[in-house]
Length: 81
Image 1 (cartoon, one colour):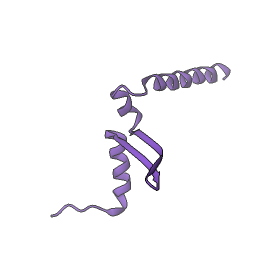
Image 2 (spheres, one colour):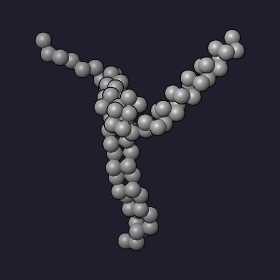
Image 3 (cartoon, helix red, strand yellow):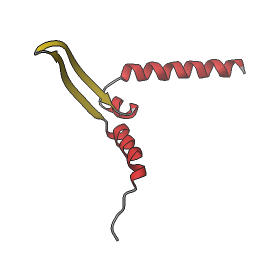
């Protein structure tokens, strides 16, 4: 029996891999007109889930601030009830 792949699940599989494994995109773009460079763009983007980012040491401070804020707001809600 041959394995089959449903095309409608391709996007879901792509998002799953991006969040679990992550991807790094690096690009240099130079916009020129009449052989004169006008604009240079250096792009560095990382796409991954928060768990993957923190595993690699990225955005740890942001993650801790967001979790701390959520804990504080949860404590305030339980105090008012």
